[in-house]
Length: 126
Image 1 (cartoon, rainbow, N blue to C red):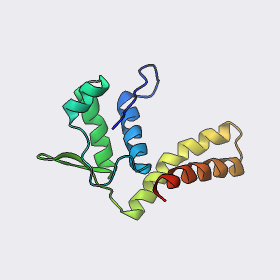
Image 2 (tube, one colour):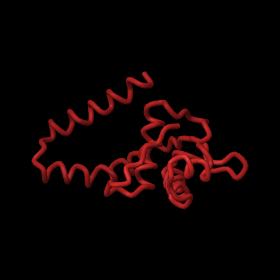
Image 3 (cartoon, one colour):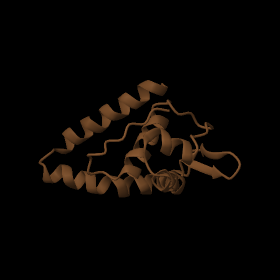
């Protein structure tokens, strides 16, 4: 698993890590059922604190994207609770849509961007 952290970014390192793991799952570079590296291993490989990796894994667990097993570590396991997924998506999308409106993006432009992102990720798995 290849992870690249931008230490100059305003985005928190644990969120960068979380986002890259989500992108890996979405693009099928990380498969459902696959074990993620141990906290210690990933921290050493990326050059970050183990607590940062722990925090990213905890967020992914809370979001229903991984399970954490004491013996097997973090394993990709998607929670397919559709109602929960829709509610979370809506909550995460609201500030993004608000920002798009503030920046004068039209509904049509926003839909076009969303469609392009879906097309990109579906091309990896479809």
